[in-house]
Length: 223
Image 1 (cartoon, helix red, strand yellow):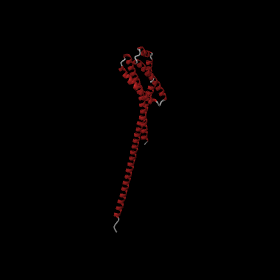
Image 2 (cartoon, helix red, strand yellow; image 1 turned 135 degrees about the vertical axis):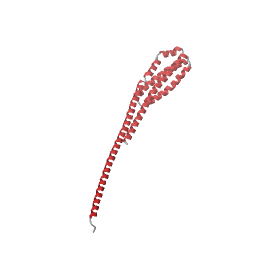
Image 3 (cartoon, rainbow, N blue to C red; image 1 turned 120 degrees about the vertical axis):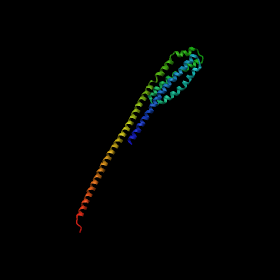
Image 4 (cartoon, helix red, strand yellow; image 1 turned 135 degrees about the horizontal axis):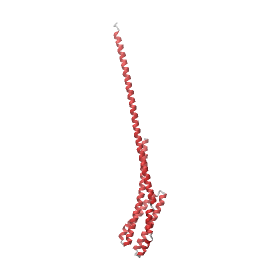
C-alpha cells in the first residue's frame, strides 16, 4: 500500500513538473512569436514607405492585429510572478513605442505628406532603437523560461527515478517474501517428513511388539 502511494505521489510530482515546463515553453514561444510578428510588421512598413504599394501593408496589418493577442497571452503566463511581470511591462512598452513609430510613418505616407516628413521620422533612428530593444528586452524572460524548463526537467527525472526505485524496492521485497515463503515451506516439509518418519518408526515398533506378543501366546500350551 505504501509503495502504491509513493508511486502515485511520484507520478503526481512528475505530472506537475511537466505542466510547469509546458508553461515555460509557452512563455518562450510567445516571446519568439512577438519578435517575429514585429519583424513582419516592420518589413511591411518599410516596403510601403519605399514603394507606396499598399500590398505591403497587408503583412503589416496582419502582424499588428496578432501582436495584441500575443501580448495578452504572454501576460497571462507571467502574471503570477512579480519579477516577470516587471520584465513583461518593459517589453510591452518597447513594443508599443515601435508600433507607434511605424503607424506614424505610414500615416504620413498615406496622407501624401512630403517624403521628407516620414524620412525625418526614420532618420531619428528611433525605429531601429525600438526594434533593437525588442530583441534584447525579453532576455530575462527567455532566460527565466529556459531555467524553468531545465529545473522542471530535472524534477521529472528525479520523480521518475524515485518511482523506479519504488518498483525496485517492491520487487526486492516480493523476492524476499518469496524466499521466506519457500524457506518456510521447506522447513514445513522437513518437519512433515520427520513427523511421518517418526510415525512410521512408532508404527514399526508397535507392529514388532504385537508380533512378539503373538509369538509368545502361540508358544503357551493349550489347556
